[in-house]
Length: 185
Image 1 (cartoon, helix red, strand yellow):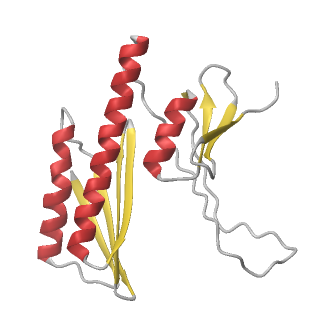
Image 2 (image 1 turned 120 degrees about the vertical axis):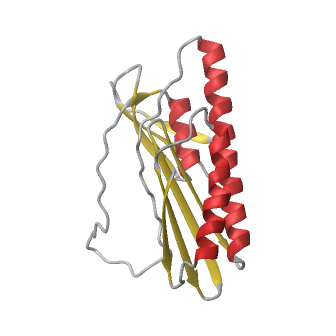
């Protein structure tokens, strides 16, 4: 894995770099062949709170975790724990689906949609779009879309339904369950 470690309001020392690489490098044991992807690590400090964000894009999976903590080294440990849980959850789901359907491993689409709800601000009549993203939508079923949404830590996920070929959205409801939005035929 190639590490891209960046610090914001913090100097990334050799000790910090070694610790991050050592801890994140342990994730390689979950894969048959070590991932050759870039590992993007953002470290930042704001008001004595350490924040670490790790993104590992791979051909069939996007791993992403973010942790806020007072101690930098503890936050690194916690983010690695989150990534391990995501990998185990992904492998369990794929293996279960493989056993149930008898089909080869499904490849997840690389799609990231962010829904950032800002706290109540001044109401204006003007609509301001502050961010725009474009993605290729690849076919998958709603279960796979929910899994991908959870792994990304997002509130919703846009995908192409593999059965109907239409664009659908899965989202997390306030009660913790999931919803699916489909267009009318």
